[in-house]
Length: 229
Image 1 (cartoon, rainbow, N blue to C red):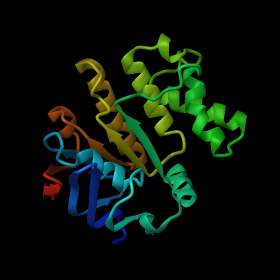
Image 2 (cartoon, one colour):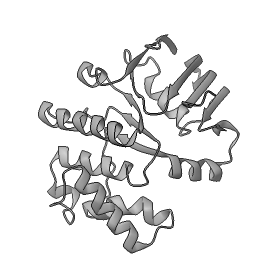
Image 3 (cartoon, rainbow, N blue to C red):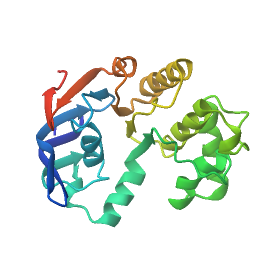
Image 4 (tube, helix red, strand yellow):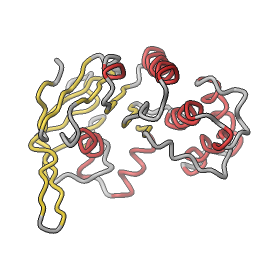
């Protein structure tokens, strides 16, 4: 890896087997991402976008290849090592907000911090800081059902930022949002990237979201058609 590279994937293959059907989702994908880049991943449905994100982040095991993140080969880690590594280095935002309905906005953001061993008082302070950051200072004690879709997505983003991760992985994060709220989320991503030099890997079907990247990786049939460089 060069000094500025935070993610490097070499010759990554991933196959899914379902009964008699074999799907080659990734067919020898190689790429690199620099610290502080916003990289969007686009392509037709079924081209391997989400599979690539899941494999790069260690959510899904690969069949063969190499994935180096912050100078560590995540394919060689045990489950516990990988879980700890993700907790320290990564944040995730998905189209489904995945908020716990019985917890308030603040408690949803606190949860990963508490699970990581952060004290209750420090977790509360961090959660409130992150909610302030995404414009939800007046929503600390609201349950998810008391929040709009855009507000729920912003809580999910605040949670992803809770541990100051170097990398944020996002899969169709604006898929359930109206155009105004989508624009607000896009502005927030740009702000966080500029202020904290955090790396964003964003899978999207939206041309508008795709345009925020420093570059766009385009995929087709399990291969990178254009890496945007």
